[in-house]
Length: 385
Image (cartoon, rainbow, N blue to C red):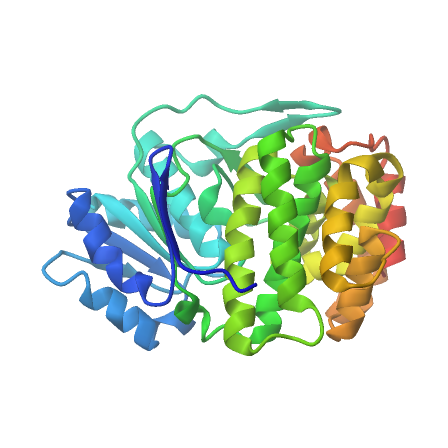
């Protein structure tokens, strides 16, 4: 079933889903007494009719546009942008685009509020399972997000920004998740359908890792199973028409973002963060290749926790997949999605270095199966190669 429009408020966040809701950004800002937005976006969005309608809704406001947000964002970009935004006197941030734009917005409001440099506020992982999050409590500018992919980043308090050494630095702050999320399927129209499917794999990963994360709960479990059902409908043959696919992927992506916000991520995302940042690869694409292999590593201990999701997927598919990792592999094959690291430009010689860096990722702290050595990560990478 294709999800209908929805509009709800939860714990101070307003969420709207439906065609045309992006043009209500101005209405959302006025309702909050805001009038000086800085708008972050990727270049490809700037010329679209949807963005033109969004800008028109800001008529009468002082607007600072900052285009050119890159994949993975960057420390230098945020630290260069922050003084400009401070001089402008912005009272909010509007983030239009995928996960890198959402993460850039979160990094920007954190830096504007707390000062210094981003490295002063980074989350530190102390293996095997301790995560040190700096206490940063100064008020942050509100973010209004208009997501165009299934990253779900706008719903979370976590974000990652790449530094000059191609390391993805991770952060967490309870004040940086979006105050309003306006999900408009029309705004995804310039995103290639293949890219939407890659971001769907990222959303699927959020749901699956949420089901077995040590941070899981009955609330995140319910959302994860519901989200996986929507993703299955979007990616199953016979495929829905393109409009329906985009609608399903974005609705499921919202649910997956809420799962990520509650349960957080594990080994799979730890690998993807390192691979994407060091190899300069899109996050969704890396997810597509790594997920079946990282999931297979955890299925050995987490099968009971994954069982409701497997039952949901099999019921909708009308076919009994023996495991969720087999379902993912079959889905990727049916859609001709990349399956191997070698096919997306990762050299085999880079795998040991990537595995070593993964051991410093905080996602390992919540993984259901302990990861004791880089050799275990390297084995997963070799399977994916």
